[in-house]
Image (cartoon, rainbow, N blue to C red; front, side):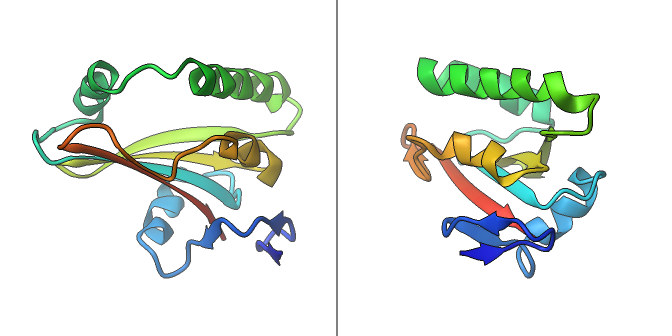
Length: 141
């Protein structure tokens, strides 16, 4: 196992963000200087979008609802909100348009185990239809 710059042990499926495009996005999305990220990249080659809100609205219509993963994500966020005032278990999310066809959803986490809960039954590369693909990558710094 490797360690991030905060000294936390990182699982093997985490990728270092230094030298990748994530190195630029982390400077914007990481105001609290946390070291762990889950980046979900949505690529839609059929339609172009001008804002993150339009892209997200289109995704809700096209991606089939997965009850278990939505429930797990909801519980994870709720449990983190409970501890935010105490400075523990932080989790932040940001959306960025990389270009007109690519949306990045970045979850920034204070602790590794918060993101490893998302790893269970997660598909790293997923083809929704002939135009829409989803790629998930775990990063650390």
